[in-house]
Image (tube, rainbow, N blue to C red; front, side, top):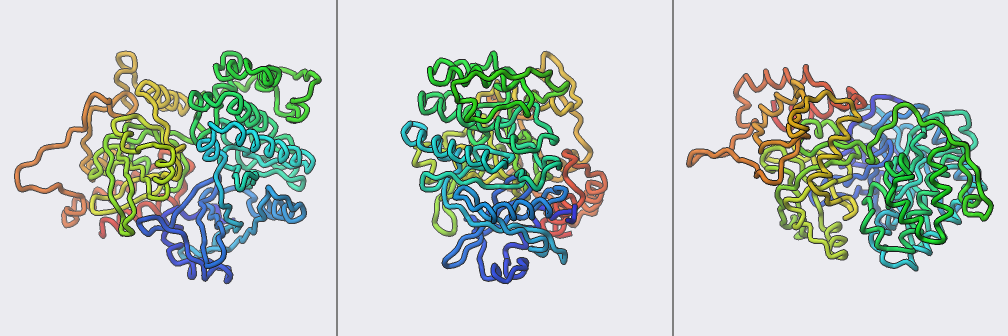
Length: 548
């Protein structure tokens, strides 16, 4: 497989004409689901971007790969063979097409599978956590699926709240990028999964039929806890990053407040004590959930933790909403962003459907925006959540970054599918999470006055971006997000003048010089971003937007 995969912007452009880019004749007559702006609606997971294909009688998920995974074709051949030989209600057959989509005259792989009409486990628990009878029914269904996986000697590889779907009160597993089947024995794991569901000692060398066992205990304890005490969800709910648990609970199980509360629930006390031991043992020694729930005691060996363990609780890479130049690089990535929502904007689309924008800065100056379209607003209304009340609050937002361009420029955004993508946090927690991020990435920072003022070196490319966009913001806090007490200071202009945009200066030869300098000095902050993505982003910015 070509390791230089297309970026999201290239898939977005191509899939506006599926009859041209898709190579399978069966799907050339399908349409792609679009958002309220008319662009293909994308969802991200693992190594791929997921789009919904629709015709009069069918809905199909096409997954387009934007991250390189070694041996992907052989993996999916083995997985597809296993799924076809073991038809189960909780599995969805997958078709891997190594040359399924044409982008810029090159062919790239895709997978096709049935589109599952239902809720993720995360959404299901959010909507039903006050209904213990229904949650308990899903828990029993999940236990049944876990037993079958043990009998089949397979593992999903990333058993978590976003990869478990609930349809008609039945469990369906999706996203098989990291799945283990017997034919793949001896290989390394393609991914490490959501850390809020995974053993903290897991590495890519852990890849066998026992891979899901730790996640199974996490899911069992979380759902059982909600069944017995629904208020736990309000106190510990981790949004779409998890159910109740965070990675810190696994690193320090003896001091975990959540585990202490779960231990007070009589039927869970023994399981909690066993789980503490599981957190300190190796993955090979973890018993099956069925054995762990049995009456016989289980003694596990304790092992020394790896020398370097990340302390971050986040399932996905975390960034500040203020670093827009950095966020543009992350087009198509599934991330968590933390920042202050400075303003909200509500209006109606061309379809006469209401929507809400959460702006993390001045929308005229390339700020990050979280968009809540009509279909998602209905979920907010159902839970009596008013998105406008997010104004002047610190938020943690998880989702797929996409780029949107208009007369004000190109800005990064995340489309909100469900309320569980947004977590309201206080200012102290926002700074703590971003400071932990800085430590974990070993970013060089200078700390002054007990972290009241932290400065980090801005790359030359970011400086030029700021010059091009003319960014001027409020005084920043230690980790690049504005303080709640200070409002964004918009520069006053003399009467009769208008806000200038870089495109207005395209006749100025210095702009072309700056752009050329920016491209030559561009260095992705995240080294996993490859050259093709770099070129794609800059093609879009400079050719389409600046029209140079």
